[in-house]
Amino acid sequence: MSKVFDFKTNGKTTVTIENGFIKISRRGLMNRINNGGGDKNIRINSLSGVQVKKPGLTTGYIQFIFSGSKDSTGVMDAVKDENTVIFNKPEYDQALELRDYVEELMNQPSTTQTAATTISIADELLKLKQLLDAGVLSQEEFDTQKAKLLSN
Image (tube, rainbow, N blue to C red; front, side):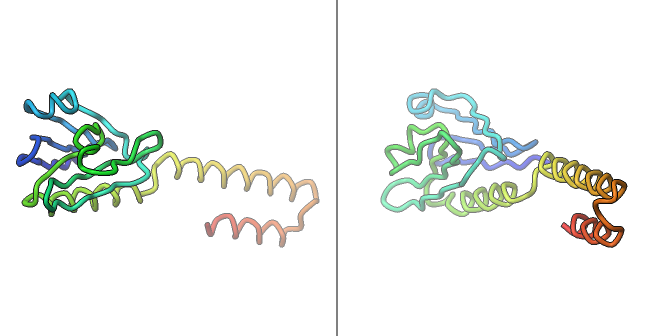
């Protein structure tokens, strides 16, 4: 499923969330001057946070933070940061919706984590079975450990 957030009032930027990525598409002269224009893709599972600065006397911004990125310390930094989207007061609610949506996606377990956990449990069960067959564990101890593994 694709979700699109269009920020038109300051910088003409579209943020599309699809297939585990955030795609920031910039248009217009100011974006070309400040960020070089073009598109930026960020993998959602690489994010460590999303920061929103409410517009006041100046513009607001939403910044996508990940390992190796630099937090914006103000609007002047944010304007030149390729991981940040600038917006004006009328788009603040949309920025909050974008932040909430991305944070929701960040909190979902990834399929690779789920697959790794399943493999790990299967490996542990095999080890327990080998210990049972070797007489190291009693049937009762095996059943107890198996139940613990399967309840996680």
